[in-house]
Image (cartoon, rainbow, N blue to C red; front, top):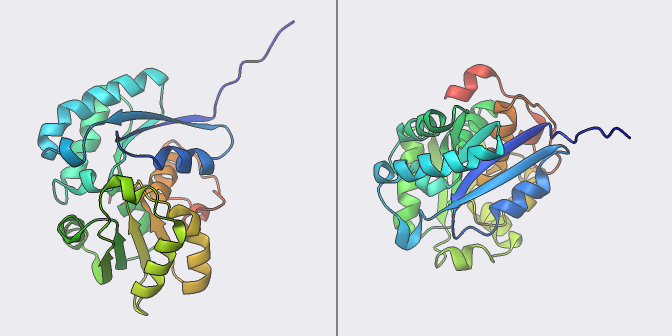
Length: 249
């Protein structure tokens, strides 16, 4: 008896911090049928944090290992790490992954910028899990990238152990409290938080797009792999295809 092989539509690779506990379930939950996410863990945050340039050989090695799964796209998925070298350094991350694997490389920062370009959003309410020092570094990256931060607030959580168990309602309340009328979008930063599940609730209530780290990497990785699926649960962004010119921004 002949049996048809089971061939996924796409395999998406993600390099995540070793301490991250929410990217995997989030991305697996929202991934469309036939799209398989694969994950590689790398010590890159907290006590393992180093300058982005020093992290590049480890990123290349992790990407090479992940490429054994035949991923169509590989993303370095850590918001703070992808922004830590300053605006423009995320392109080096992308090139490092591509050079090591022959596959398209992405970083959370580039996925975010592609999403905001597609949403035509320049005036942002910016919320992150970090204390002010880390929050400020990400805010500077966004400002250097040309975004106008019209409202921002650090949650000042005590590291990844607290971030990963803080409930979605916490992020929804922060967004409501920080929202200002002139905002084009709300960006809730961090791959290790439970914010993705309140995107549609907040968009319906506040009337602007809401973007989160896990949402943008899944969306942009899908688009980079050539799939324009409407992704339920990912809010306004999940309904949009991406123009090729926007991907490079």
